Amino acid sequence: MQTQQNNAPLYSFEFYPPKSPEGAVTLQQVYSKLAELSPDFFSVTFGAGGSTRDKTFDTVIDIQAQGLAAAPHLSCVASTKANIRAILKDYQDNGISKIVALRGDLPSGMMSAGEFRYANELVEFIRQESSDHFQIHVAAYPEVHPQSESATSDFKNFKRKVDAGADAAITQYFYNAEAYFYFVDHCEKSGITIPIVPGIMPITQYTQLFRFSEMCGADIPRWMRKRLESFGDDKASVQAFGLDVVSDLCQRLLDNGAPGLHFYTMNQSAPCLAILDRLKP
Image (cartoon, rainbow, N blue to C red; front, side):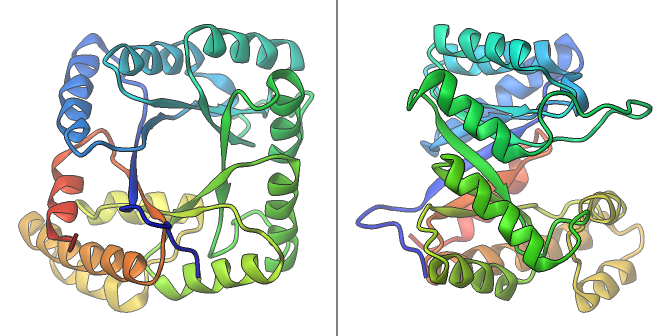
């Protein structure tokens, strides 16, 4: 099992670009609170087909201007080498040193994937263009990517990203710790030694969680689903149960060697802070 040698676990937090000036102010308040935890970095998502390119850039620069480490997401679907090259230069010129490199999703109605088909091609291109300037994080799927033909082909895709030059991986969120442990063991047996950081999704609303999980292929265990359904519209009970479940999951992951935790914040600080407050040092 992986361990974070001689160091406390590293935490990172993911945001999506705000859609309005008011949202930008709110997000600044959120990451200011989370900054008190001295996270490794804050990441900012990149819309399908680069649809939030400018907002992602602006948010990343705003975070970086506060003296905080920011890692923009960069997806290759519907992109060209020329525009990826331009984006990389902009980030280098602004002191950004971390990138989350993803395949991304095609926007609705768009038929062409562009010059890149897979994330490993993007990782390889980043290395060719900027050598070791960027620390590159890629996605991993302990429960298998929903569009993969099989678990075997999905793992091969992951290994190609590592071989192309990825420095670390962030997993899709999950609620079954065994899926993560098995995935990491499989990586180690296959000679993959990069840190694999569990992705954590706090539970605040059941309908939202169910919708996201359907889209991304994350499994909600039957016992969890039934308990959440039983709470109905009782938001306080959903949140209390979610805090218990996710805090226990995080503690188990850290106790068994996870190098840190990456939180899908939904641009909120309170759920993440509540979970981290429960974890043993």
